[in-house]
Image (tube, one colour):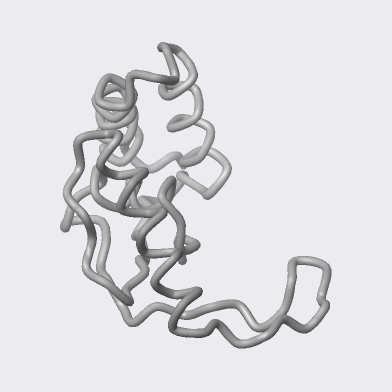
Length: 121
C-alpha cells in the first residue's frame, strides 16, 4: 500500500520498520482528490513538504527521513488501510496530542500488534 507523502504516514513508515516498508522516489500528485489538475510540484514545494514532514517527525522524536522519498507498506493478510489508520489514530488520540513522543510510542505498540496479527481466514 502506498503511503501519501506527509508527516503522519512518514511516522507510520518509520514505526512499522524495514521489515514492512520500503522507500521509493517520491511522487507528487498531478490531480486533486476530486480529479482537478494540479500544478507540478516545484523544488520549493518539495522542500516545504520535506521540512513540514521533518518537523512532524521531530515532534515525535523520530529522525528526519531522506529527502525525495515516499513509502510503501506491506500489510499482512486481513489488515487493510482502514485498520492500519484506525489503530494508529486510536493510539495517537488516547494521549495528550502535545506529547508527540508518547503518541509515537503508543502508535508503535499498536502498529506492531496489528502487523503481527495472524491472517484472518
